Amino acid sequence: MMKKIKDPRVLRRLRIKKGLKKKILGTPQRPRLSVFRSNTSIYAQIIDDVQGKTLVGFSSRNKALINEKLPKTEISRLVGKKLAEKALQAGINEVVFDRNGYSYHGRVKALADGAREGGLKF
Image (tube, rainbow, N blue to C red; front, side):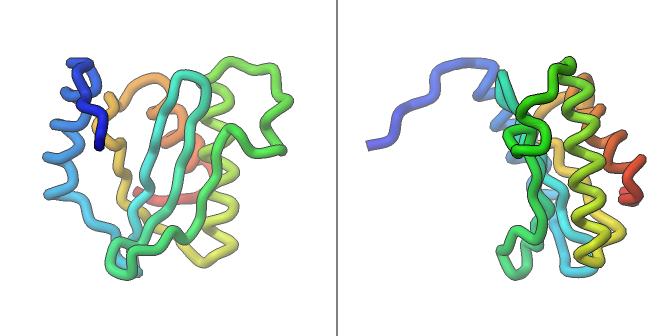
């Protein structure tokens, strides 16, 4: 039995996410960069929706970043850079950015800026 979500903030984000899913699709030529933000961590994956596979992923829970004593926005920027490095090694240059219903602000924006600094185009 699934737990029913009652938090209006979560419901609002899921409603926005549903609308974005209609417009955003990751293809093999231009996969989708999906972001998930929790209170403590941030996760990013590059996904090919046609095959249904995650091509590259990175998060702030990675061993390379787990001991960093930086603000969350700086860690998000580093996650974006590291993800871009891994994507370029995998031969991925262009992506479609999926903010997953979150506002393009703060940590989500920092991750996107870090990915752009790392060499991804979107």
